[in-house]
Length: 315
Image 1 (cartoon, rainbow, N blue to C red):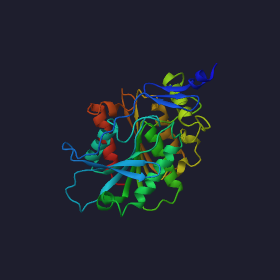
Image 2 (cartoon, one colour):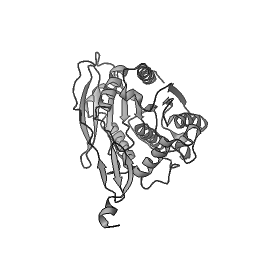
Image 3 (cartoon, rainbow, N blue to C red):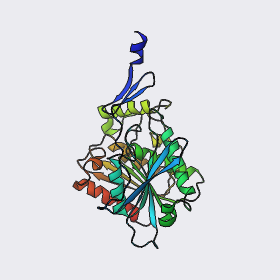
Image 4 (tube, rainbow, N blue to C red):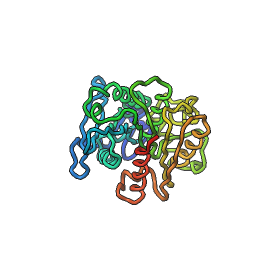
């Protein structure tokens, strides 16, 4: 085999989004479209972009709902987008409308983190970017206008879907293990979380999609110990019970390849010694992140209502 054919050897494909070659190169079919921040007439929600770390380009999008009475401050939602750790962004046509709708429905201020993606920045970089973003929010509580003027920092929620839910969980654990001042994490929302394990569980046995997800994890996290890596298998994390909040909502979908792992997460969290309450909501007949692609369908509206209720329920 000549050198040119060696350089063209494919290590992993995630069609139609990404191809990773054995020499480390990454080839993207297309870059995700950028939706600019705005003030939307339909929802009354305003958005703006901020740079969190100029040296790396780490950034985020802020969302502010239409506020009638500035005397009453609002909860803060910190959101992590999905996309297999390697696609999508906080500014994409898939995530901008969703977070904007969530802000309008829940009446929260939100910050959607645009962490750097694999394979150019391999996992665990997404966790580091997300942690830096959390610390930045705490440091800006009396500086950034939308935080200072509108946010109640005793009511902070962390949320995400798919790989973003995985990140949200890991950030919540890190919060519980660290002395992070200035933020009280009230709750964690995990929508169709991307978790795995070496031993197939229930519907994972013989599931082709689960096998592909396992290969994806190894591709985006080259230094991983495997599918029992605590980053992707919370049950193997010795700090699982130190989750830094008292309330957790896990949303699963009946036809999702990650469905049983989400349910397993709930069961293990209850048995871990963690001192909190976990709720599980299932969307029957639906697949992975269906709510992003069909946001107006009945099940998506039910999912939105469940998340909004969780955020707006006092501890």
